[in-house]
Image (cartoon, rainbow, N blue to C red; front, top):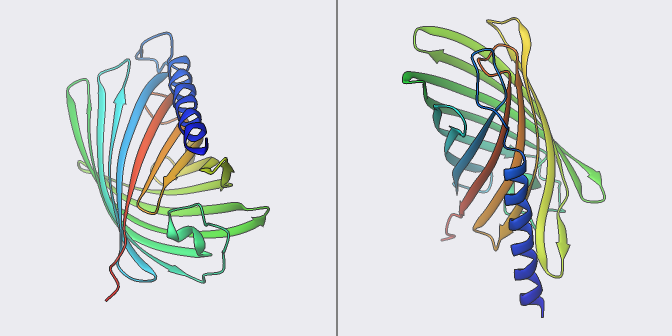
Amino acid sequence: MVGFSTRKYCLLLLFLILLFALATEPSGAQTPNGSKVSEYWPTLATTVELGSRLRLQTTIENHTGLDSRFTQWELGTILSYRTMRRLRRRNSDNDQENEYDLTLGLGYMFVQSNDDDVNQGENRLLVEATPKRDLGLRFLLQDRNRLEFRWKEKDYDFRYRNRLTIDRPLQIRGFNFIPYASGELFWSRNAHAWDENRSSFGVRLPYRKSLMLDFYYLRKNCSGCGRPHTDAFGTTLNVYFSRKKS
């Protein structure tokens, strides 16, 4: 009975996510004056545990405009170090970093975009710090602070990003899942302004200790972009590799 109920719940959840994705598709295509655009963002993230506190994560992400000729690929890697392990409520979460109060990261990302047959490449150097706090009742609050040093073609820009995320693991008849919500603000040196914000909510589905699937909806608002408003539906497959103990 437990297996049947779990499978039925998974099918229902996937159906609702698909229905929501179709419902959020905008009615019109993009126009030069910046109408709303809908995108789909699939991501593959692989995490290798290099030690008890050190890990390497590599991500590849594709942004596809559903009603425009926009495509973007992001390939990145980040080395992170975690300190002060005091959080003890993450039994249903495959991400070991969520058991630590603070993680520090250093990484690199390459971005290749094509918009109406115009190709652009961008290199980013990333530095970030993410403190976490247990709010009680198994709620976890994370505050990721990221510095991005960006070289796009011949231009240079510096950007600060602050993202707050809150989540809570739940269980229904033996089925574990983690709903969450997040909000992020962007400050650009070249624009001298907070010119972008993103809000999202989703659910993570952990499987054993090696896999976790993430479904989410994201709303992006950007005053300095060609598209001021973007709706995105995304899926992320997280694959975890643990170091074998000798």
